[in-house]
Length: 371
Image (cartoon, rainbow, N blue to C red; front, top):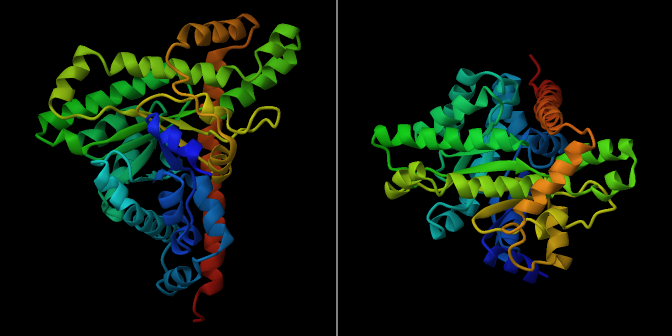
């Protein structure tokens, strides 16, 4: 069942699971996925925690203890989520040690309500790193305009970062610049650059969802031919940008000092359109030194019938650019699409967080000891 996953791993694609829950930790499921399905990392986001905690499974005792202590709902969520991340990090620690810190990582996101506040994002990142207190943690910071200086600041302090919600090539280049700037600050501060790691989460399927909708509105045969092309083209050109930045003279000086390249991470790889093969964003995004974080359904589909045929990214750049150009000629604005997706992404995570606040608050009230 896992031959395709092994081939993917052998091609230089780290397989991370885009999900976490206490049940997954305590049942042994996460350990099983590491052992049998080549999973070497875990990503979380506010929507994943909202789903996990709202299910109630495995959280009853901790919620009761938090209610007895009369903690605020914000503190309760922070204690619950960091506990899950800490436990998952411990399970993945052998992978972390075996890969010299490249994999075996668990990501936890700053409060999404802070996405447009640089100073608060930095403060939250420091707090989360301190609370989880595991070397194999990545702090997730969204690639908003306010997020960019926060990324540089946090990296400069020696905290490893997963930059999330990247949709555009221009913003991706700004993210890589922020990472390099942060490493230069860390180097100036005398920190060990070899201990700092980062991934840049470039979102995939949502690009197709939005552009396909606009192509359908155009309705021509040419528009129909371009359905399902935008997301792969966008991601492949992102990899081209990655190759350029991490082969520059500026990068060479940092690499000589022990710095690690910021790996591209393909996020949102679950296929949303049933007309497409369910392993599309895995099979067609194979390139060295990348990460693919998958929901469990995509992981299982890849194990069952994924078609891993080697590198499917390098050598495609001209075609990818031509496809995006063809979409633009139909009157579909790339800049408008990627800005909309970023705004929606931030809003979605904030809404999930607010839903989590409400459901957790209700549980704390229910479990609170009578006066």
